[in-house]
Length: 170
Image 1 (tube, one colour):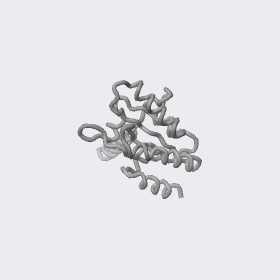
Image 2 (image 1 turned 60 degrees about the vertical axis):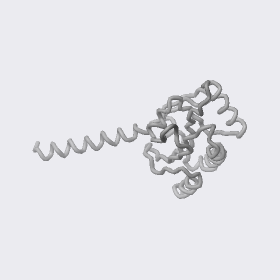
Image 3 (image 1 turned 180 degrees about the vertical axis):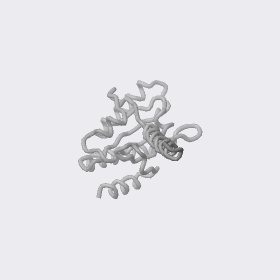
Image 4 (image 1 turned 90 degrees about the vertical axis):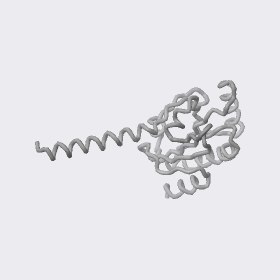
């Protein structure tokens, strides 16, 4: 095997390895507010999933609370066309995690939410997605991932998410 071939093989392996790391970088491994475990593979393997909307949310964020029912409607409207939505809830600063989960459950019930609300207790998923800002987390933030888990779109504005999903599923 020539030196050139060895370099070419090494480069190909390096690219393949970095692509694997890139998808793992945005992996989600969290429990939802009912205690059910979710990971990226489970989310992506839901029937017919082509795109995943990840919404970073906090119960103390007014724009977050306003957009969640809209996200629920979008999920319901486009789910059969391959769109799955998940909410990654950030701790809102309550002293007690049980109190925080109870408030999230109450909110979900009040708004008849049918999308998974995952609780990012230690904010590890938010760190992976670089949602942070000094002194807290910059929410709401929305990400659209493709079927392989790569980020294809990100925004802080709800209207941009709805517009992009409509473009993608045409």
